Image 1 (spheres, rainbow, N blue to C red):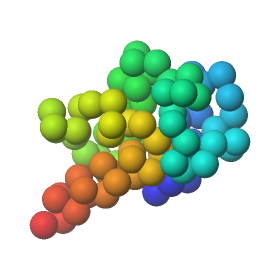
Image 2: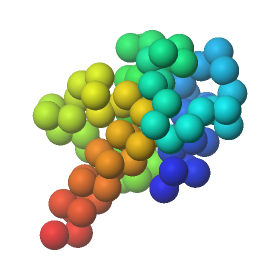
Image 3: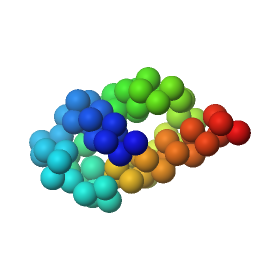
Image 4: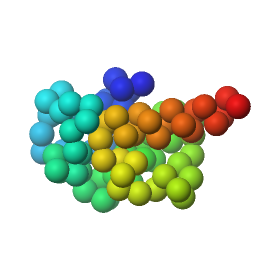
Length: 82
């Protein structure tokens, strides 16, 4: 899952740094993720993982790091399975 998140982040995140240089817990907003890019990333994630982010996850914390995105997606895919 992290690999796909990194691919989408590289494509839609418009970061001024290489995604490969970021750890899973690195702050994406400090790395240059803008609010607009986070929306683009969210839409790409929804398409790639066939999920929809609920309002409760539409916040800065959910997209703060690759690990946070992975956790948010994991909670959505677990819900879809349940």
